[in-house]
Length: 207
Length: 207
DNA sequence: GAACGTTTCAAACGATTGTATGAATTCTTC
DNA sequence: GAAGAATTCATACAATCGTTTGAAACGTTC
Image (cartoon, rainbow over all chains, first blue to last red; front, top):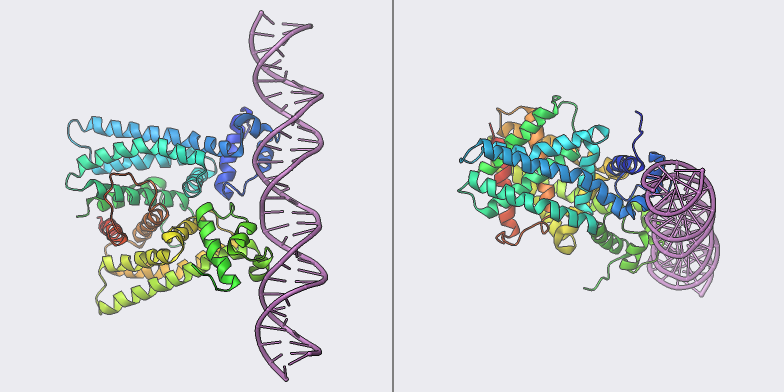
């Protein structure tokens, strides 16, 4: 576990890990600089403030995830020709990149999921602006694709079902390893992803 | 808006409101005592510590909600006789009490939802113990009812779909007024509840 | 109304927070 | 290898944090 990377990346890495573990406010500047083995002033020097660091940590993961989602949507639409892609493919384009990114993040991938949950529930102005900028265009694309795939569903219904799906995805990511009784059969992530896609697709298709 | 109630209740009331607005750690003891117009030492005197206050605020809402859920489940099973209640009735027993409680809570009901989200993502030891104690028996009852209603679904599948439903419910409660584009047709809470039940029921029935 | 337990009060505690400073060091460019 | 920019460093700052304290005020009971 050598870490020859630069100061900025080291800060981002363990900031993500600690934020995910303990929450944004329960992690001090000093916790991060100690963990990253950099000087106390490094965060303010490289990022400006703690809030800016939070936004940077969050942005580093959210941007590629949403890019991957758009790319997956593009690919699905392309391979479907002039027809609409299957509902499952549209939902997979939304769900799978989030999971894949969460795997790249430290601590087996739970750190980013937790961080995302926190950024949703206690957003700073910086994070809120980032959320809007990142998700508005994505949601428009998702809406359009879903409306085409489910022509007899109103746009309002699609909006609500998308919100439900979003919630299911993130609660899953957030508590993947938690609140799981012993009797639950072990399943790998791919299986769990399939289960979610199946569930959401049926939810969208409800009369 | 007269508040002739006692110190303890006044503290609980605005603590709930402030925690919901800003997050557990962004609200200081002084914010609460100022808002409740009580002395600074009142929180430590009446509750012991800030963490204990958080648990008390949370407990005051969670306990009645889960009692109402169990009661609704009882009622549904009773009225169904020796048959299984309809899937929608089981899900409604889970969903509706949470919504109803959230309406009683300050700020049009969003405060409790936000508080719940926070308690899920950054639980103190006290809150974590409370969560376990409150949700384990409820989930067992829900599992049993759902297995009876969906006999060809494995218990593991029921667990995961229940988790997805839980996520959809709480993300909805947490962001009810947020991230809603202007074009979404206004719907009252009852309609939204129905939409969620429809979505979740279809998700559970998926092959 | 005296004695009691309960609650409220103003004030202070030590610890920790995020940020700022200016000097020391390293890196880059000529 | 000297000049200048970029980075790291130890240290200090003011503010805020949760908690404690001991006295004052209150309510109850005999």
